Image (tube, rainbow, N blue to C red; front, side, top):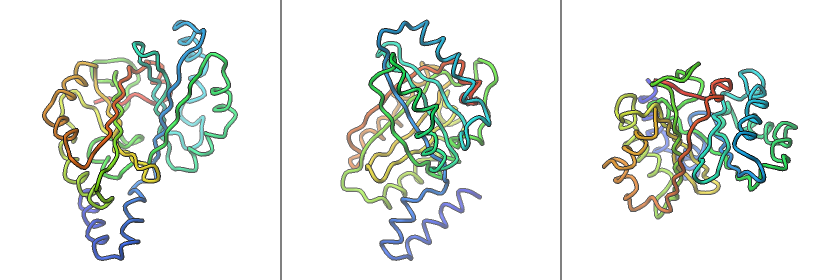
Length: 251
């Protein structure tokens, strides 16, 4: 039904005025939002950072923050970058968190520096790729089917309209349906039309499966698309404390 509904929306848009078509595509089929946060450590050991995570994770447990569906605690030890991927029910909830005392306390921590924060809308086609937080299965303990690796991809458009990009998403989403990519638990299709940045947040059962995907013909075909440019990829491990914050998807 969701696929049919998406196609009906496309059909409707084709019969509307240009301005209305653009507005319909910019406004996602869901109200969900993704917030990605990165930071580095300053004069803080990994052990002390891990303890900080344990101290604060309870603040992100289900029901603690209005509109928060889950937070994945992430880190890349090799690059010295840490942070989180948050899922909110709507833009208003994300905005409220971004001005909350909890958030302001995090960014004011003297040992957490060089913060980078980006927000994105969630495309409705994510429903077909197990990418809608709150609807997918989550793990309560570490297992072979729980997510352990996050891949975040960003790119920009070159000589491609939002309408054409939306159609491309509809054309390729079936490749990411459950069971299509080995080790892939789900992909959230994301976009920030105001900044002209699009991409996806992928969850894999382990780092090897993420490696396999990035070496696949599917990924190489996406990266080689002439209208998708300035690709950026970021890899992170998932901290097990994410389970307390409902942030670890599972098969």
